Image (cartoon, rainbow, N blue to C red):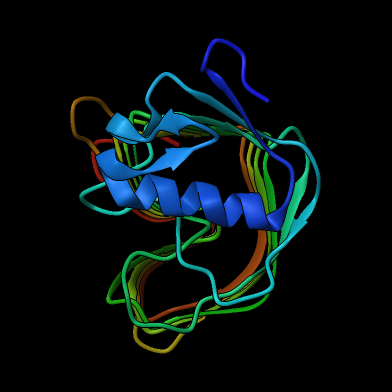
Amino acid sequence: NSEFGNLLLIPSYAKLVEFRTAVNAGPSGEYEGVSAMNGFAGKNIRITANITINANWVPIGTATCPFKGTFDGQGYTVSNLRHTSSSTPRGLFGYIENAEIRNLNVNTGTYTTKATTYGGGIVGNSVNSTIEDCSFNGQITSTSTWIGGIVGKMVSTTVRRCVTAGTITSSASNYVGGICGHASYGESASVIEDCASNMDIFGVSSVGGIAGYISNSTI
């Protein structure tokens, strides 16, 4: 299930957990005999079947060990994403950097995030990355800041051809959007293009159908 060490396959929930554990372990992590050194930068990870999460989800990637590879959902769906802890960030992915997430669908029942910052249907916090051809369908309930249907906070990130549906309900959150909660400029401008959201969104301030807040970025 690997080709020259660059192609890694994820066929099941158990393997998704194993992969997540490897990423979050940093240099000491390993998946299918391949080191997680540098967040799997240069590696292509592909889902090969629909996957149902059957436990409270711990996101892939942390502030100190972000995911840096290419993750291709190949049109498959990860279902039953749910969070109840107060750790941050929240999403299928927590932190990504110099990464690409594509062709991935995520469905939830009720996704409750108590994290202080960064909650997204796909990614919590994205830096210098691309998220494309992805979808999120579900309910997000939050008291956090920076909440988005696809990504909570994005810096120098491009989100294209992504769609969302469902509901975001926040009793105390700022920066809430159907695609992105907060988009900003780092090394380059963040870009949201060819995206659509059919989410009902309820927040406190800086609330938008596509983005809650953008700074030196474009939609």
